[in-house]
Image (tube, rainbow, N blue to C red; front, side):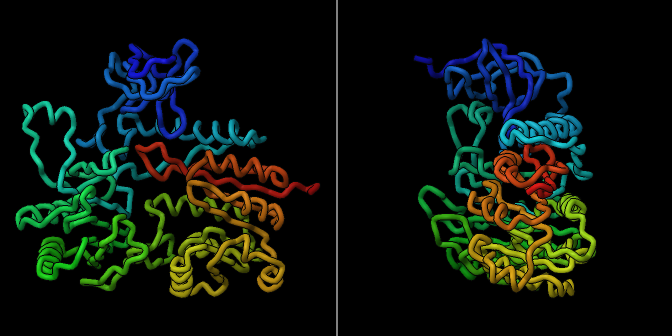
Amino acid sequence: MRKKNVVLEKVPVSGYAAEGKALARQDGKVIFIEGGVMPGDIVDVRLSKNKKDWAEGKAIHFHAYSDKRVEPFCAHFGTCGGCKWQMMPYSLQLEYKQQQVADHLQRIGKLDLPPMSPILGSAHTEHYRNKLEFTFSNKAYLTNEEVRTLNGEIPVRPALGFHVPKLFDKVLDINTCYLMQEPVNLIRNTIREYAIQHELSFYDIRLQEGWLRNLVVRLCTTGEIMVNLVIHHEDKANRVALLDHLQKTVPAITTLLYTINPKKNDSIFDLEPQVYSGKGYAEEKLEDFVFKIGPKSFFQTNTYQGEVLYKVTRDFAELTGSEIVYDLYCGTGSIGIFVSRKARKVVGIELIKEAIDDARENAARNQVNNAEFFAGDVVDICDDAFFAHHGQPDVIITDPPRAGMHEKLVNKLLEIAAPKIVYVSCNPATQARDLALLDALYTVEKVQPVDMFPHTHHIENVVLLKKRENK
């Protein structure tokens, strides 16, 4: 029987493993550690899982810090769920991300790999996001340090900020966030101050009651700012007063919306945001392409690095102007439109109909006449009749969600047998799994990691696959 609540003392941290957890080895056991830890630290670890060959836990005391550690720049570091690698120099973050991609492709994919290109780091390591979502709560989360200073008297105060990791009902009140440029902090703090002053109710996620629920802010490189305030029910007098105050305080807002969400979940995809002022959408640019982004549209959340990622994708496709390109998981058409000038034809396929509507509109806005977009499942759409009408693909670009491609789609790609596949992934682990299946017909020719999210363990990776000559 392995004891629970075990504390391991003076554990030297040696590296990083999957999902950004620090890695240590002690007495032949692998230990995965959370809690702002980096290689070179020596920590005490309270175990939450304790198996024969491995364990998981959280650092509860630091005996020594790595000599490479730097001072985190955010006051919320260690409590907020984002930017967990602030204590690490950015150059070192890139090294670990590069290694993460190599480890996944070799350990999971077991692939013969070409030399991997050096990771493309972000020129912007702060203020790089174009979208953030904040949550209202009638009970702000307090850290253990804050609780200890209150001598048992725990105040109940509202919060507008981010969910605390692994605590669905706890929201950390955020004063300054470095993920997005101003005026995002001014927008959030203005709404919070006005709501408290006028005694507007913040949502209680457990009781499913309260008025103010979520705040979504999008700031584009074009300078356009779109704000969507999500409320539980209509209260016209308070809604108008609050939105008027926000617009007056932050006149840079170009589109202001509100959405009424009486449901138990925070998703707004089945709801209709209402335009309070402005045109109801924002416009973003990648190179000289302009994209319409509505309040429910998906778009790369780092515009600067999104452009870098798409350039890599376009380069890997090796287009000469004569190719038919199939863009799978095409979303609102951004990749397909981005590569369209170097292709004879682009065929985009996406499950979500609303995204396809946006893709068609974005193609029209950019005068892209050689792209068509279809809603549905690739496995169902891509039959002999479809190919006879639209042509067999010379290049397939696939950009699936974190879960990777469904095995049915991988088998479909093997059946289609396009000469080239460019696989864009936000999760190298599931990408490696899919590449292992595609290895039956394809070889990996190029690998290019791209860092989209500085100070986090997340990493994008682009792989070029070419059909084996003897297949």
